[in-house]
Length: 92
Image (cartoon, rainbow, N blue to C red; front, side, top):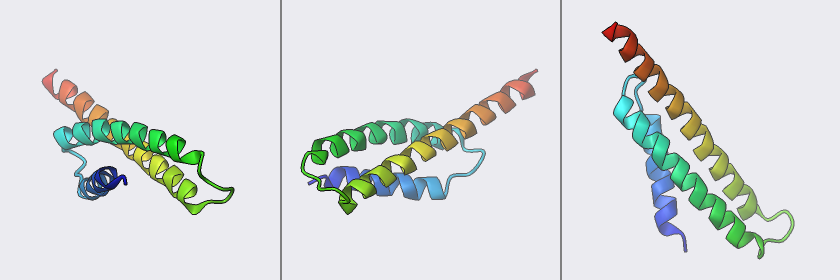
């Protein structure tokens, strides 16, 4: 049902695994995409929550996916900001 979102999640994970600490363009793109997909999975979780029974493993997995995406967003934002700051220092 949410095949496109699952594929995008897997794509983000693969790209994050090979992200280099100095790749500002990739970090910026991952930062944006992970936050957008986090929002999408939040919507999916809310949409499906009405059908979940207590202790449903799907609900837990959707929460884990959200946590992973949020962590990727925060990490790539830090990488982006660090590289940006280093480039400003080098200009001076």
